[in-house]
Image 1 (cartoon, rainbow, N blue to C red):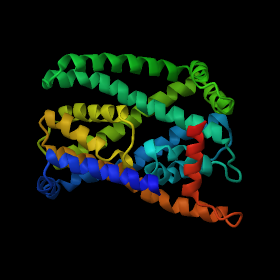
Image 2: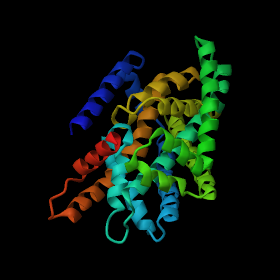
Image 3: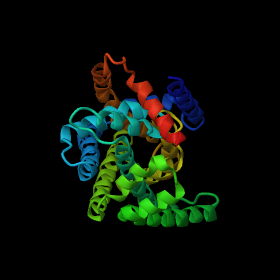
Image 4: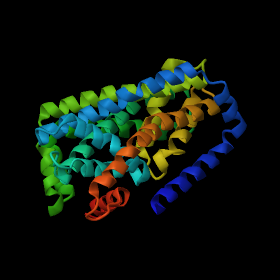
Length: 332
């Protein structure tokens, strides 16, 4: 609970700090003038976004532990959303999925779940880095920011990082050796072995599915930008959105659902491309509601059901258990 309150406080501080760039009355005006149809189109893509996230994770789980049903994987993904929202960097996703996949008839070793969740998250990170590396030169052509040499250095770093990360993702065995050398801890060996056992073909499919999912949630963001700024250029908005996700991936998730970090990046990048600051802020906040808050509320009954299933020996507290598991993982 203290971690949740701290994240909420940090998010509030960052959001209040952004009022130096965007006035509250401007946010209200932009929200009142928003087109509901564009927002509903973004909302309609939510099941596809979450479903694809669950499907790519399900493929990895089935490759490691054959026979795990689709329903169990979908429950693990959706049920972990509330835990991920409450923990730093969405680490609760790791523990939450492990909790749901340890039940009767769906026993998956926690280390395996952790490794496969890590692979899935890393594939999404690669999409954000690669898309950001492609979008940054287009942004620099349109906008002339101060400190241009630093931006060019950032571009070079993004290209190198995306190429290196892509090579590791396409070769699970190489990833196993690299992570084994960097983390030579006995307790992590089962998780690293599970990661190394992923077939190269499955790794390629993971990257393709991750790229498709990236296009989906980026499209949601662009639709929300159009909802709050009907005159925004779709192409430029797509460039700005790619850079928002690129910047968010580079900043540790210390606030609740990255609130404030994403909004600040949206104001900076989309604002530089002609989108009003208030519209960029509102679009980013709406994306948080659609893609994080709504799935977390949907998964909350699953957390409560998990608590009931764990009784009476002893009365479990899944939030506390998940956080303890996360702390244990971090300590190791």
